[in-house]
Length: 153
Image (tube, rainbow, N blue to C red; front, side, top):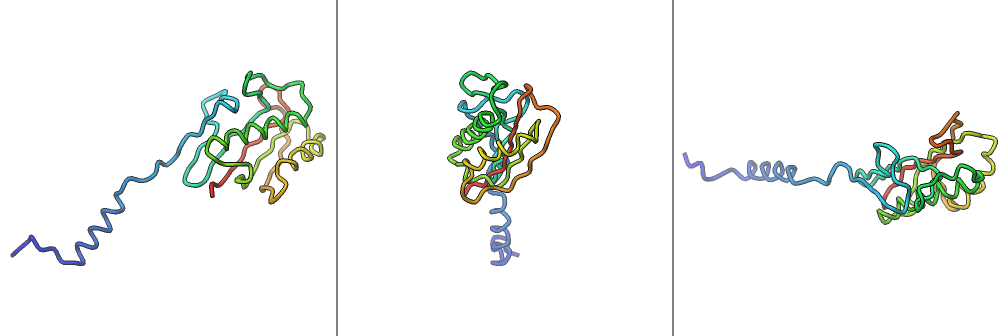
């Protein structure tokens, strides 16, 4: 019996199986930038998995000084948080328009209308889905934290 000849259907099946063994894209990629506050714990500023980017919660911390904006108004804290999210996205060539969902955590929901007015200026067209949750306390005694999910087009 000549074993040097492999039937065509076996060769095709083997080729298909081997193509599945080709190196895959990394399961996850860490996204990091000095233009946003560095992580204050064991987490990444963002993680990309496939075309989805998961952004860790950003606090109103000045990325140049790493100082929390504790005494700033809810409007200024909201701006700083959204600017920090924008900086993390920019590190991957993305913008706020790529965000599909946000989670907003606030220590005082009475300030929601003021936060919402600022938020609306960052998401004018096709705003992302959003959940807003009142919490008793945030890290560094800040008023707001926002995390997000973005999809790279």
